[in-house]
Image (tube, rainbow, N blue to C red; front, side, top):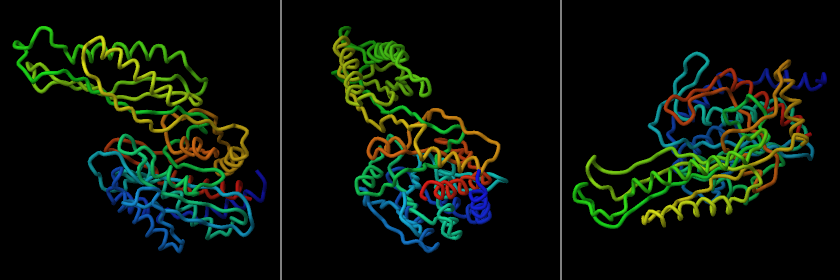
Length: 393
C-alpha cells in the first residue's frame, strides 16, 4: 500500500454518505420492477443521477419499453474506462416494499441487486466530489432483462453491441467471499410430454395408450444417468457440469389419465464448451425417450449465458486487489468460482473484457426475504471508487 493510495482511499471513504445510500436503495426498491417491466425503476434511477448533476443517456438496447441508463464520468487525462454495471429487474415474486432494520435494508431487489447498483452510483458521486479520477473514465450502465427465464440478457447484449462497454467491468452482485475467476454457462429448459387422445377416467383408458407419467419417469431416470456422466467433466475451481430437475407436473385430479407431463430445470457447463453442442446432446437424449415411449415431447431450451474465465494475471485483477487491500487492510480475497451466472459472463463472451463480480453482503436472493447490509454497501462504494482510481490511471 503506498502512502498516496492510502491518502486517496481516506479521502474517498470520508465522502461516502450512509444517508444518501439508504435513500437511494429504498427509492429503487420502492418501485416494483419485475423482469421485462422495469421501465419505471430505470426512470427512477435516471432521475437520481440527473438530480446529482450527471448527464444521463437512455439507450434502448433493443428494449424500448424500458430504456437503459448510462452515465459517464471523465477524468482529466486519457486512460482506460472502467464500467460499473447493474441490473434493476427482479424475479417474478410478490412485491415487498422497502424497510430499514438496523444495518439492513429489506424489500424486493434489495439484495439482487438494487443495493449493489446504488453503491455503484454512490461510487460515481464520490469520485466526482473528490476529484480523484484524474485519468481515464467511468461508465455506469443500468438495465432490465437480466433474470431468467423472463429475460436472457438481451438488453445488455444490445448495449454492448451499441458500444456501451469499458475496458473492464465491475458487477455489484451479492458475492464477496472470493474473487471469481471462473463460472459455468447456464441454460434453462422446459419439457412437455404429450399423448394423443382426450382426457379420460383412469379405468376407461385404452391399454395401449402411452403414459406421459411413465415417459416422464423414464426421462428423469435418463437425466439422472446423464448427470452422472457430466460429473466427470470438472474444473478444479468451477466444479462439474450438471443437469438439474427442479419441477415436475402432471394431471388435473388423482384418477384422470393425464395428457401432459412437464419437467423444468437447468443445464450448466464449463467455459469453453460449445453451447450448440450442449443443446444438441440434450435434445437427442429427450428424442430417444420420446421414440421409445411413443409420446410427443417438446423441448424449450433457452441459453441464459455462456461460461466465463478471468485471467488471474490480468492487470485489472491487480488493480482491484490493490484497492481491496487498501480498503480492507489485513483481509485477503482468494480466487474462486462463481456459482451463479451474471453479466460478467456476457461481457466475457461478447466483448472479451475482464469482469469482476463483487458486491455487498446480502441475502434472500430470489425469495421474498431479501436484505442488504448498509455498512457493506458503504464498503463497496468506497472499493469501487478506489478501483477506478487504480485501474483508469
